[in-house]
Length: 459
Figure 1: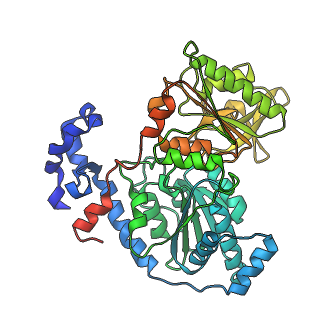
Figure 2 (figure 1 turned 60 degrees about the horizontal axis):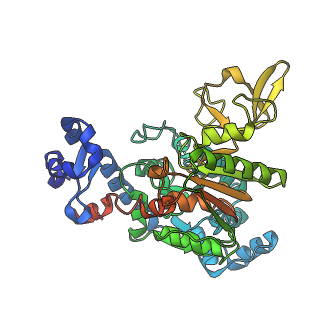
């Protein structure tokens, strides 16, 4: 690493706008410059070292072949669940069953978590007592995954026992009793979190990683988890058919267009409402709130998604418009937006406001929590939320609001994730916003640490 050490970071500082706001001395102490072959970017030294260690652990694990179940047993699982697989899905299951470390990628609704659950059912035919841990970056996605795979749900942070912001710390949790770890949303994770999972599990633990590299960008500076797909020895299968979107459909085609940086076109499954020039963000919020209430009245599950919570068309404003008030009442569906220090609730858990005598309580998993015990700002209504928070969730209808005052926080990855939460999506937007959003790529311009590691001979 010394060949690209701290003092050499100075020559690329001028090309990174976000660096100009920070102290030069502080930067050179905490960052390093990658070689030009890896983009010449600045990355935190801790992230570089975590990626180096992660590559070593993954290659060591990936060389192991595990006991496989017979084809007849797998066919019995499929018959029991009355599921027919396509070719890619069947190949993915075989990799999950035979490899210590495997990655299954695919767009929304391609069946990644279903494939993992089938593989786990097959493993349980050999070992009925197999312990399964299901993890994701958000608690809601972890809970949905655990329900499918019949495992214990964790956020990635709680799985290894570290707090958000302390990912570089050594894991505190012992996972030696866990036989299978399934990680969803893996491309949003920091390499240090995945490294900690490998450190605290036994060598024979199956690590099944699921995700879509075309959806929301990773946390951190680099595209570390995306680049692991290029690591030799890692089993990787991509699923191509979006079953949630009805297979090859107009919406699925427009999702592919957005992923390629092209503006989507309206058609079956995708409505685009362009506001008149005289209309403003407030009008977009009013239209979204009305359409959402109409969906609910028809008995459909519906959600309004926005890139941000702020502004006249942010999800806070839309939640207030849907409810018609700014206070909670019994029956209101809410979601937690942060974790409780006393572990009474986690970030991303759904609940309902109820009454206990004269006092309001939040009921989560049948456990009532007095509203007065919840930190102000830790809950919000469930009618509208950010596109990031909705990752891993499924609805009948999605309404995406994209206006000029929030388009700077949007990207093609966000658009792909938001529009595929349901088989039908309506986009309410101002002129020019869609083109700006899909032209922004939050992943491709990020540093590629794996190239630097190859250049130094680490992999």
